Structures are given as structure tokens and as C-alpha cells.
Amino acid sequence: MMSVSEEMARLDDLFGPDALTIHRVRRCLFEKRLVVVHGSKFVLYKFFSPWRTKKLATLLNQAQGMDIRVQRPLDAVLGLGEALHHGGFWLVTAYEHGETRDAKRLNADYAASLGRTLGRLHSIQSPTFGPLFAWRAPWKTLRRHVEAECGDVVATLGRDDPTEKTRLTAWMRSAAVVFDNRRLFNLVHGDVLQKNIILGRDVMEACLIDYELAAFELAGLELASVRTRFFHGESAKYAPAFTAAYFANCDKTITADWERFGCHYLVYANLRFAHRLLRRARVLERRGLTAESANRLGRARKFWRQAVALATAHAQGQSNPEALLTFVIHTSGICRV
Image (cartoon, rainbow, N blue to C red; front, side, top):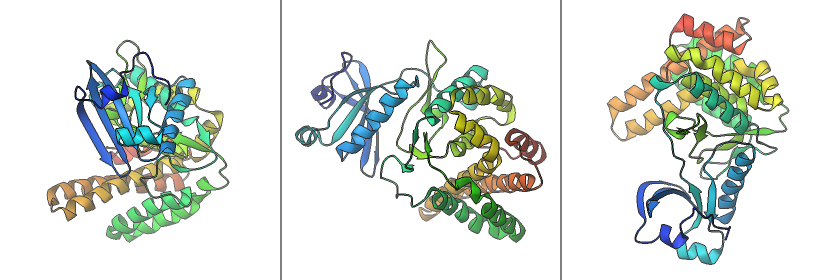
């Protein structure tokens, strides 16, 4: 058993009759709970093997060592006897107090704080790639994983316009150089949404919570996703604060990689957004929720069209990521999340 923090309630209390579970998420081989006991909140992660529990604890401790605000590990169930007693291998983390903000409340300080946190997180590197936890299918190669997602979008949404389909297919073949000769991969959060960003009450410092989809892949893929998701429309004016803070805090290799492949990452980001929406639309259609399915499909088509516009502009000579994104926003007006 890891040592128990002074602010930590006893494990028996966290699973006892006085503990109130106010939020629970279950996935394959994984569970997360938000528990209130003796007036204090704790976040509990349950795994079915001790190495996953230790892996998340090690990751969070490493992030803390790099001055990244994360949920602090407090205790863990690692022994078989304790796991049988408590129903699994648990990691107990502190509950991070603060607030989330919707898109209408973004400002330059928020953008800079998010940039600092994400830049430091992406600087954690590993020679191996793939999801941290195995409830997703393992990746054979990062290139095959990304191209499988994007290929599905091209095959499905490109049917309406064979010219666009041909253009994106050709672009993906030329863009495969992004994945060549990679020896180190970056830690990405995998689910950077506003609901997963907590701002401190006293200090404007972003804390990323919920690490179920964390993975080691290329930082540029997540950077492009966040750049597209958060900074469009009225919020676009805060993009310089975000990017300046990000590149001031990330590893220098990430900066060089973005300067070389940033345009590629922006196209891939939009194709991956389209893929997630397309996959969700299929699930809703199988459930008979046709209106909701049509809504997701419409949003997927917007990202598809934006990917086409980005790839076309890139092929025509736009090589600066920020200039490319600005050009497409002004000419297409479809940069929406």
C-alpha cells in the first residue's frame, strides 16, 4: 500500500456506508467515481490489474514533478488481498477545486494557462506509442491508427464529391511523411474538452482531469485539435496567447515538429473530429435516434469540408500553420466545433 496522505480519508471510509458516490463512469476494465466522505471529495479510479493503477499514479507524479497541475495521487490499492477486499485495484486522487468555463468566457489568461499546461504535458515522452490503458484496441503503428480513422471519413463522406475524395486521398499519401522515423512520442490527454479543464479559484492555472483516453502519440495531433476546437470565431483573438504559452513550455522538438508539419496536423485534426462524429452518428442511427444521428452527421460533414479546404490550401503553397488556418477561416467560415 502506498503511504496515505494526511488529508486522505481511510480507504475503509471511502468504501463504507458514510461514503456517497455522486458521479460514476464505467468502461471496459475501468471505473471512475467521485466520492464524498466526511465532507471531503475524492476521485477514485478502479482498474482490474495493479500495473494500470501504478501506471496512472506514476504518470500523475511525473506530471507534478514538471509543475503540471493534476489530480494528486493520495493512495492506491495494489496488493491482491486488498483488491479482493475492495473489489479492484484502486487509485485515490485529490479532488481539484475550481471552475470550468464555456466558450463565451474564454480570455487571454485562460488561453495562456491552457497553453502552459498542455505544453508541459506534451513534453513527457516515451519510445512506445499507443493508449495508456488497454480498453481500446492496441495500435499496430501510429500511422495505421490515424489513417484508419481518416480513411473511414474519406470513404464515407467523400462519396458525395469524388473530386474531394480523390484530393484528400492523394493528400494523405503525401502527408504520410509525418509518421516516418519517429523515435519518441508525446503524452497527450486525449479528451481536452472544457468540462475536463479546471481553473483554480485563486490562481489562473489550468488543471486537466479525466485521463481515461491518455496516450502516447504525436503532440501536434492534439495541439491542432485544441487550436481548432477552442480558438475560432470570437475566441480566435486569444489564439496568440495560447500558442505563445504552449511553445514557451513545450520541448523544443515539438516546436520544430510543428513548424514542419503543423499544416498536416490541422488537416488530420479535422478528419479525426469528423471520424468521431461519424462514429457517434452510426451508433445513434442503430438506436433509432435519427434526428440526433443526422445532427452528428451534419457536423461531421462540416469538419470534412474544412479538412478539404485546409488540404487544398496547403497543396497550393500555404505552409505556415497559423496563416493556413486564418486563410481557411476567412474563406470558408466553417471553423466550428
